[in-house]
Amino acid sequence: MTPSPGVEPPRVLDDPLVDYRNEAVSREELTRLGSGMWEAALDWLYGQGFRTPVRTSGYADSRGRFFPDTGEPGPAPASGTGWEAVLGEFTSRIASDAFSSYQPRTFAYFTPPPLVMSICGEVLAQWLNQGVDIWHGAPSATFVEEEVIGWLRALVGFPEDSFGVLTSGGAMANLMAMAVARDRHLGRDGAKKPRAAELEDAAVYAGDQAHFSIARALDLLGFPADALRIVPTDADFHLLPGDLEDAIERDIADGARPFAVVAVAGTTNTGAVDPIRDLAAVARHHGLWFHVDAAYGGAARLSRRDADRVAGLELADSVTLDPHKWFFQPYDIGGLLVRNGEDLLGTFRCSPEYLRTVHDEPLDWFQHSMEGTRRFRGLKLWMAWKHLGTAGLGQLIEQTNDLAAYLAHRCNEDPAFDAAVERPELSVVCFRVLPPNAAALTGEELDTHQDRVQQALERSGDGWVSTTRLRGRTYLRAGIMNYMSTEDDIDRLLDALRQPGPV
Image (cartoon, rainbow, N blue to C red):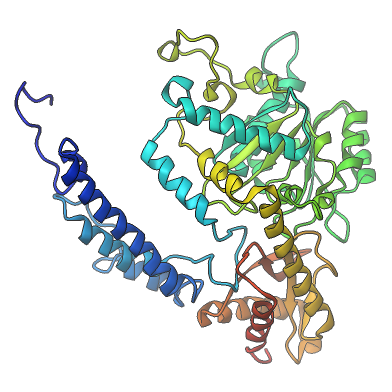
């Protein structure tokens, strides 16, 4: 309700911005609030954050602590409370049970400890509160993200007429990539986009280590369930060009219509990198869209020493990157790059009347993306890249790769451990803990032992690794993106994993 002229609007309890006209009072209170917020973050970081990955209890206990009265979410608060009390509840209910990627023996999924300058960028982005869909609503934010996209395009080696867009993560980027590939290759009779009947005989090829989001994308885009052709990978989890060629040729002979190949530069399970150059040649020979999911491994291009571990990205038609993985950014920020920038417009361009502009063709990000209004994702990466430079970010890549190599070496030389591959291609290491009586155990009993030692490590608070399944067997998985870790932390982790005795 709009107040009458000369009538003060009702005061929102304890909100210093309400008194913004009285700058001295408002700035002082905002400074106190900012200091309190920062102190609450540091209290968690130097208390739990550096000491333990997660509190040592299961889901039920954790839920009971957060919902102490009924074990279920409560009603919305009817009235407000002071910010000190709200920060106190953050500390007692939220920070106390948060998962910490800062603890130096936390090797979790693909969650790095975010760079401090990125955190600063995130705070500043939220203050600016730019809706990055149209230029008019986010002028400088539009240009920051254009510049960041330019840096990412150069990183993968794309040409000047390439383009891209920041996304929520790799899943959204892969979905958009499959939408663009569909529109480029499956439209018939001059139609802009293929209709449902034109998807029935379509085929996309990926190895058995491809991310789940590829199958999900094809399902959401209306493809039949068998459109994704899974090609078995080799002993080291690579999609081989000869096997891909055979699968495509069989499908063509059977009347299918292949239209895309998906390679992976750094699989989620093991960090394996498909032979991208050879797979690109197969895709090109058959006139297929070639997408590389480099959500994790693409960051290796930051390192002059290790860039060749993901060679060939420049040959792709589209590339997924995920800076909230190995670029050490806080969630969320992903990205999709396309060799021909016009392809994004061909799939996503639209002209709603309420987003019209009198400016001469400004860069409006919603025209290049499935998303409309979205948050200012690019500032944190822009600030961190400015702060460390490519050389500094590359040094962190090398440091974590070296730690992964050290972990694999320790597992290879110690009969108490069994590594899935002798030398990791990037910074993921999968391995098994072998108890003293391992030779007498069945495969299922060894699988159970891996779960047992993972849970024991989690309960100890001394470190954290996840588990995965490879070739039907359970492995521990260390995703090493923690730039705070050292070889001593690897040694301590392995010592902790030995503790559970024979099965």
